[in-house]
Amino acid sequence: MHKTLLITGGSRGIGAATVRLAARAGYAVCFSYRQDAAAAQQLVAEVTRESGRDSGREGAPILAFQADISREEEIRALFAAAEQRFGPLTALVNNAGILEHQTRVEDMDGDRLQRIFATNVIGTFLCCREAVRRLSTRHGGHGGAIVNLSSRAARLGAAGEYVDYAASKAAIDTLTLGLAREVATEGIRVNAVAPGLIDTDIHSSGGEPGRVERLRTGIPMQRGGTPEEVAKAILWLLSEDASYTTGTILDVAGGR
Ligand code: NAD
Image 1 (cartoon, protein in one colour):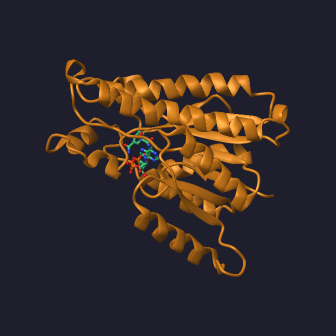
Image 2 (image 1 turned 180 degrees about the horizontal axis):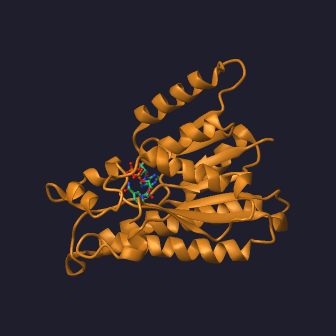
């Protein structure tokens, strides 16, 4: 069956792990990147090589497209590019997200809140809208699946660290639940994964020394997760094996 996935923020971390697994599972994958063109091209080359296809001859099952999802016109261009290359979409993973570290609420300025919510909430919301317009049987589509990236922080609150980020991910939970019900009879399943502490670069921007190690000790499994462990959960939620699962927020958090 023709399977086409669009994933936002795919050049590194959980996104890149999802791109690799999805390509191995037979999806044609279009992923967006914001800035790091070199990392994006490297991932394209890796997946192309692994697919055993010559991009000149048969067409590699992967496309990288630069897009900032806090800009609506760039989201439209991203969806258009994916469709132009691979035909109708069957799946969307809203992975792109940002975190700014360790600030008490009284010290957060409006610009920080605008940045967090523009990407994590409005960007994700608009990508969902674009997907529903294409996938819904109500609009002549053939259905499909959406997975949003939430966080355990949505229900833990991230007090003293990044309450703004936690609140943005709580909005993703509500979007996931509401949209899942809205489109449940239109062939679209909508779910979220809620990772705990995953070892990626998102934690590299300016936390106190030893912060990640301190967080790790609070996890029942006593370790951070890998991007691949989250990607496997995402792939399952996208797959037919999850055909009766919608409106679910799946924790991938080592028991946290
Ligand atoms: P990461 O920082 O490595 O990756 C995030 C990706 O999103 C990057 O490729 C970045 O360029 C992209 N991005 C950010 N803002 C963007 C924008 N405006 N437009 C386009 N792309 C943008 O982090 P990660 O850990 O791989 O995070 C992936 C997702 O998982 C995020 O939504 C994050 O909030 C969520 N998450 C991560 C953790 C964790 O511990 N790593 C935990 C819970 C949730």
